[in-house]
Image (tube, rainbow, N blue to C red):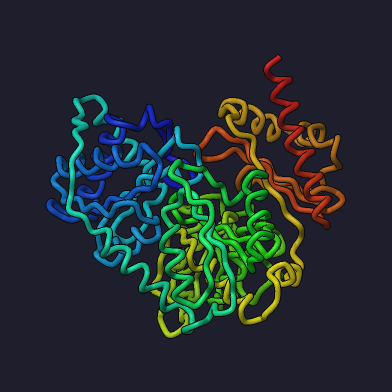
Length: 474
């Protein structure tokens, strides 16, 4: 078990039972030691729809009770809804989710009463867990009072006040429901604004939908549904509902960083914090200051908090996966949106759909109007962590190694080592190699002048990784 870009992740076989109790008790002790909670205080527990989540949630509830805290069960609920309810109650919380990764894996996201834990919290929780690991751990599962209705009601109220009444009237929107915990709430929110909603692809089995690297199979479904139902857009989210997925009227997915850009314009943001993997055209695309970070919500949150502490207002952030975070209050519709410094899929979805409704143009035309460099991303799954580490060590060892590795593609002009290696080639294309922070995956991000060039560069980049790994195995 280890912390990745957002939360604790690992195989279900490793997390179930003792490990989930161990880390929950470590989190509880950390809350008590730091004064973030006192004995008897409320701690919320939510979960996604993967098969292992109910048992892990029950174990975490048992561990919280053993630690002297008062757990509340919020059921299967989107992560941003759980986080919002926690901020409302000034209560810590845990979300049992593996996000977009396959069902044989799962994880836990931890929240202090004021929001997501940071990297320092992760280090301390890890240290406490190592100390507790030397003793007996009671992994008894337990139940807790159910506040799922209260948490959902608060989240629906936030989203129902974001746009004018009837703002989405005239739009026909598909909701790819699969196994995301956002599926029913998303339908209710869109219908509340007058959209004609078509629920699609609801699944009892867990489907791992990665909104940052949408699979060919998922794109095929989206394109088929778009033609069949003559939709203006299709929207969805990942497993725990904190990363949005939006396709245009043809079923072509919009990149998450474009959704973040649209949301920044919708909110009239002053400061935008986003990882280095987001499109390089963001800086020139709006009237705001852009701050670049490492990949992962803790780094985006740290960047936002630094801006707030420096006296900045209108501070928000987003990741390349589209998850949007706010660190300042924003005026939207008839309401003031309070800060929600955790990834949210609903706001970028609504901002994008209302833009299409207002401009009365197909989303594909709106996307083209932003004139961002064409970007693409994909990952090699089940790629050993040791192989990823060896590759990155080799590439960082010397400029000659990096140049030789990329020689089949082009010549290196510049590089950035903020998170992974992001290389600008002599012809101004960009290729970025980065191991996943929470799964055995190797990711590749690219930018180019045309869509075909970006797809070709992505194919070349992934093939270089495969060839190097094969050579290493020999």
